[in-house]
Image 1: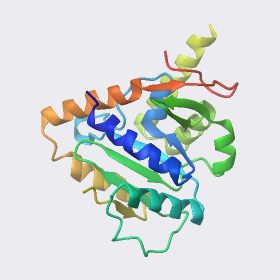
Image 2 (image 1 turned 135 degrees about the vertical axis):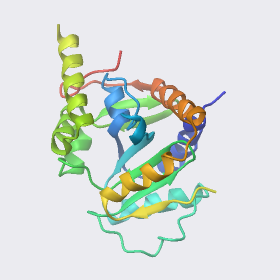
Image 3 (image 1 turned 90 degrees about the vertical axis):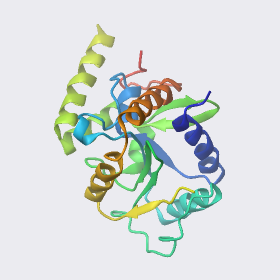
Length: 166
Length: 57
């Protein structure tokens, strides 16, 4: 049986592809894929969160493609459909009951979406190809944010990379 | 129907998450964690460039 989270992503990915939404997987999922298994943002009981973060190419056309995809999925976007897109400020959250899917227009420590996209890992999720923020860019972003969870991630990711080299 | 939330400050993200996830019961939290692990297990690396850390083992 599909988990609710996987089922949601398997519905979302075809719509993103159909509307040519340009995005990269970042955050906790990227950390896991690069070899440090941890639960999204759930680093303390008080700060429990399970979310999947996407960084979308912050162009107006890509933003509108994203809105089209969300509309096709039957997601209610009425409240902000007419609001002006600001590439430095506009974020979208899809709040499912026990997890969230976020589309972010910017990532701390990373200035150029296109450069980061060139560096990406390519992964498959079922039948879908999906880009994952590279190890180096992930570390750059983690260093810029520098919360305790980010410092822990940096340490663990470096350890993993060291283990793979030896 | 899922109602998307648009926010304009990254700090709002944490506030919204904190409010919403704090309402989850412990069994639902456990299920969310299991669902997360299941989700991650379905990502399969296709390439591993020199800049990347390599696939998860």
